[in-house]
Length: 295
Image (cartoon, rainbow, N blue to C red; front, top):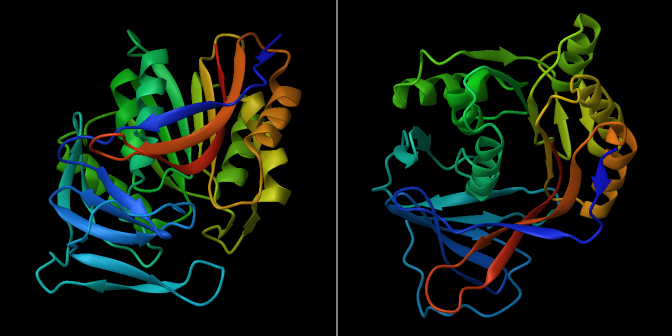
């Protein structure tokens, strides 16, 4: 029976050379480096004061007046219009500002990539599933341990994931790149009798599938997580769930996971993802909530 650890934990990303640093934050914004270029983005949870007197940036995302994440970038003309390469361990990928205020990867996921690889250490035959896989950095990180199934509803994101694989010199890794609705795909895998050694899912608050399917987190997550449980067994190693930009506690995610996975061995934990500022006396900036099962 899986043991639920009630006290929350932190998974903190320290940043890494050539890929990402949280340089400073405060007054509802954050100052970050993505490879060689720095950017300013909104961050409501940075309620403290900045420490640096100036933030020289190549771009700033100016939020709109609504609460749904609208806004626009103000970018320096010298910024490469087709993006630039950044690297995390053996994975190279393209960073580029998007209309959704991020830069084609989520650097706060770096400790999650490390955690999954630690659980699969020594394995080259693992079968893993990445739902809502976006531009594929997590899938490429997992691919050193075996076959990966990468699922995202966006053709553009999956195309970028393939490009990132080629940029990394990892296009021969055993990865299935699928444009599909994540919930429908998981349900079909259950009907096929498939099982996985590990599953990671990063569902949005709201989204649409390739055929116009509508996804709402609070409505769809219980059913999707139920199907994920059916794709795991006592020999599986992990299930990792992250949720961004919702009014929800990680304890709620852990409670759902506890209900669905209690017949398996292992441990269920929950808490916050955060990134650490650089420099002396760094502050921690929370970015998302998570729940995870490991065995």
